[in-house]
Image (cartoon, rainbow, N blue to C red; front, side, top):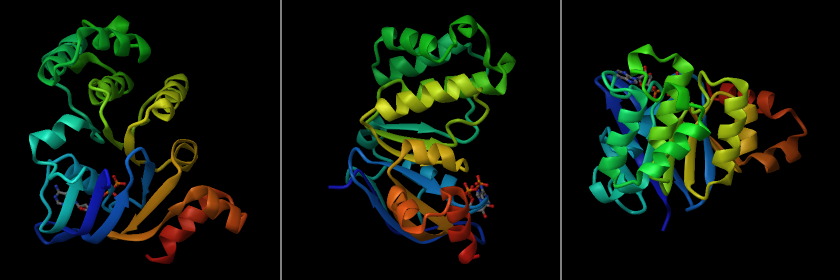
Length: 232
Ligand SMILES: Nc1ncnc2c1ncn2[C@@H]1O[C@H](COP(=O)(O)OP(=O)(O)OP(=O)(O)O)[C@@H](O)[C@H]1O
C-alpha cells in the first residue's frame, strides 16, 4: 500500500480549476518535493491530503484512508503555508493544547521548544511573535506527535539560516513519509530523493532528482525551471 495516493484528482474553486486530473503515489518512508510555478496547485494538494478540502473528482488516500477520517488525521502532520496558531494563546499554551488533543507527553513540548529556539518566547502570545518565530511554532505543532506522514508547505519560510539548517537536519533524520512543497531547489535537493512537478494543475514531470541531474549535467535549478516552462 502507498502512504500517499492521488488518483485522477480534480479540484475546483468555483470556476477556477486548481487541479485537473492529478495522479501520483508516494511509498511509505519516501521524501518527495512538490515543485511548480505560483498557482500550479501545490497548496491545494497538501490541503486535500490534510483533509481540509474534498476533491470534485478522483481519490485522495493516506495509507488507504480518506484524509477526512480521524484515523488518517492521527497520523498526519500538516504545516500550512501561512500557519495561524491560536492567536490569543501563548506559544506554550498552543503546544500544550495540541499535545493534549493528540495525547502527546508534555516532555515533547519542552524538547521542541528547546530544539526550535522557542524557549525564550514560551510565554509570548502569538500576536506578538515575529513571522519566523510563528513559523517555528507552526513547525513544532506539525511535528508534535512525530507523525508518520508529514505534509509541509514551504517549511523553511521566514526562518533564519541556522534554524533552516537545524530543520533540514531534523527532517532528514526522520523516517516519516514527507511531501514538501517548496520554491527553493537547493532545499529540495538536500531533503528529498524524488520530485513531482506541477504546472497548471497537472503533473508534468516526476522522477528521481539525482538521476535527472546526472543525465542532463545541467544545474538542477535551471533544469527544473525549464521543465516548468516547457509546458506553460
Ligand atoms: N480559496 C481559493 N479560492 C479561489 N481560488 C483559489 C483558492 N485557493 C487557490 N485558488 C486558485 O487555485 C490555483 C492553485 O492554487 P494553489 O494555492 O494550490 O497553488 P500553489 O502552487 O500552492 O501556488 P504558490 O506557489 O503561489 O503558493 C490558483 O489558480 C489559485 O489562484
